[in-house]
Image (cartoon, rainbow, N blue to C red):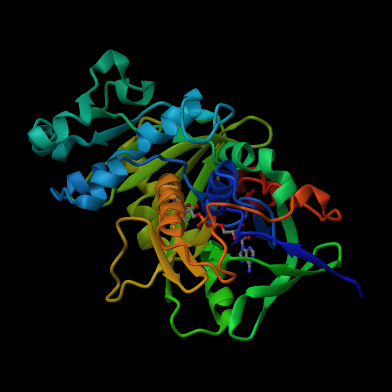
Length: 409
Ligand SMILES: Cc1cc2nc3c(=O)[nH]c(=O)nc-3n(C[C@H](O)[C@H](O)[C@H](O)COP(=O)(O)OP(=O)(O)OC[C@H]3O[C@@H](n4cnc5c(N)ncnc54)[C@H](O)[C@@H]3O)c2cc1C
């Protein structure tokens, strides 16, 4: 079988938000870069994300303002600039589901929360929403809590993947299985594309951005210097059927995580879907689907008893978050990358942090100038990808609520 030779500066594994953002940034700066994807674009955690562009209010809720919370605070602004066409990447085609979110506290907690939201820390991030301006659900006479506006957008993840990938389709290859790395030389690898063609790739850097798939790639490289991964499971719940309106809202309790986070989407017939995470999803991992749905029903019945969910159809989604291993069950509070020789292993840990992670990696590449062949990465000199034989491009993954098979009856 013929093996085609392909040379480039950077190979990225994984076509989720992190890999796609990095590909766009690298190509914009002139690096010959190639992205390899085994499934479909966005097929990993990205399509399960709620699309919330966090600005770190979660850290503020803990009263912790650290360097990492400063970094995440910049994210809503960075994404908004891109969406308006003035940012580092063109995201003008991204579908903004909501420009902001709301946080609500139910009756018993309201006075405690009011004091907290009036604190200096929170005043710049949140404002109380008066009765008439609230989502209709919280205008109901039976609602006794308070509602605050959080100035952080919610984006449609499928449109993010599309906007990032579409201009770079010529540099995205659909591959089968794991690559074969040359022993002690990760810059030389063999892959098979999805049409069965065999490729020998010579690159300066390999960036592992395959989410949960990073563990297998690390094993395929076989170096004990690369970072380990941890998985944190979630059991999300979605429902559709005569829902009163789209809401983007967190129910707050006196803990780091919202009791419930609801975002709204549309199924393939345009019907409203509520997608629910927060504590419900974290605590639900030990439950069966039926148990989790029952708890979700109880939560909504207790938090918004005036909403009629009699016609709702429910479904659960089991999905892992992939992150660097932190030890002692800790969770990372910023994006992460590790550079070891020619391999960079990275996890954004949040979709919102993809721009920061990509910028950090490009900066690291420029600063260290670590090149297997000794040529300067900042002066790309590899042949144009367009001159290569054709290779298959992966499809776009569907969003989970658009997959009819996931819905129970
Ligand atoms: C339920 C849920 C809700 C979330 N909500 C939010 C949110 O609202 N806001 C937020 O900021 N973050 C959120 N997150 C986190 C966010 O989704 C992730 O941090 C982010 O999507 C990770 O992107 P990624 O590109 O690193 O990985 P992924 O999206 O997992 O992409 C990895 C890609 O690599 C591919 N792949 C795997 N193995 C290989 C291989 N060997 N070779 C090539 N390709 C490979 C996969 O097919 C996949 O396409 C949420 C996560 C979950 C699970």
